[in-house]
Image 1 (cartoon, helix red, strand yellow):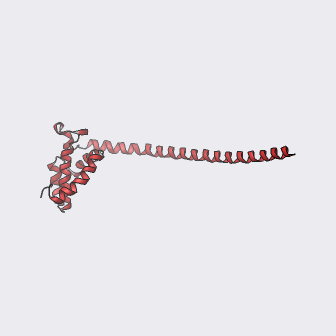
Image 2 (image 1 turned 90 degrees about the vertical axis):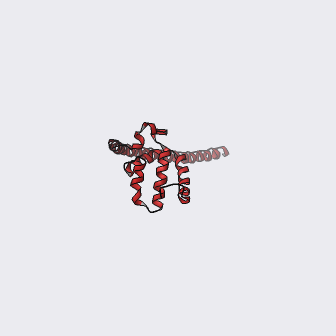
Length: 152
């Protein structure tokens, strides 16, 4: 009798465990499927964006590139003269701090940029070097305050 009761009890215990495990497995499968669908949707969305970004990039390439990048003797890391870009940024930053907005276009041209757009295009490429950008962000405000840089 005891063996029969133990056997029945074991059967119910195992079947309830099996149901819990089955339930958890099904939930895990649903979650994995949902994550897979989300990932596929995100990839599809990214793929749809890419042609738009490529079109913008092609349009930018059609326009005249910055003179800073054109001059081979001035090219440095990645085709960008970061020293010249740094000096230009210092002057631009300080002029803005002094509310001398009328001088900005002359500063861009002084460093070989036809327009702020040309400067921005070069800046965005150079800003990929986060160490350089961090150092610049720390030093320029100090130089501007002490009057070490920028046309006055």
